[in-house]
Length: 139
View 1 (spheres, one colour):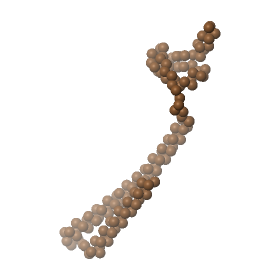
View 2 (cartoon, helix red, strand yellow):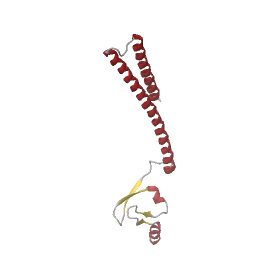
View 3 (cartoon, rainbow, N blue to C red):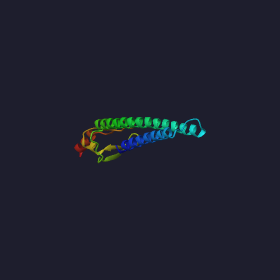
């Protein structure tokens, strides 16, 4: 918020300073009759154009800042919806696929479930909970 306030202050200051210069030129009676007068008046006109252009850019930048903030907020909502409360403390277990021999990683919590482990690369079965239960029975 400080940048917007600071930018607004700077823009107001520039507008005031160019207006002051215009007033000085008028008060001094400078006109286009002399070469110097023509140069000064054109410099003032260019400064006025620059201040107007910068003012438009400043307003556009302010709009873009608000738009980007809204998009960022929306993206945060989407991330929250997709990932929920992301737990960065998860541990991953590396497993070599017996079929494609690629190292794949699984969240350690998947081993607590009764789900089969499928290789994300070759889509073949790496581990079946049934195999584990069959081995326990044979022992």
